[in-house]
Image 1 (tube, rainbow, N blue to C red):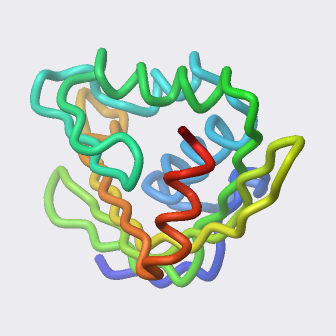
Image 2 (cartoon, helix red, strand yellow):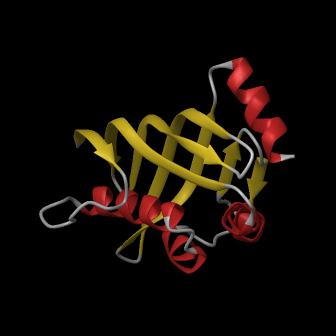
Length: 152
């Protein structure tokens, strides 16, 4: 199955959407609402899960990944992202989505735009789509440096 999706923000009506689309919508709803409990439901808690991002580096296992989201959700900055220009591919009990994220990183002192290339991989585990891998990277070196400095 190959599917093209224009935009996911997490605030969409899920009626009529495929189960993989709904899993992605659930992720962005949890992220943009800083909801760690729902984020935990979106991810597999297996040892082999991996998150690779511009700030957290490579994190393995749910405990390390949860700590990254805990830091984001409880930090002084508000981060909002939406996923766009998405290609969703389903193969057996896996699907992977490739696209881009755009959004903002806001603190009382500054606001930075975000532009991130993003891949997410999910596995059907006991009838539920669970995220098992995320990779995000920032193309623009100056934006990456500004973002890393702002988070310190």
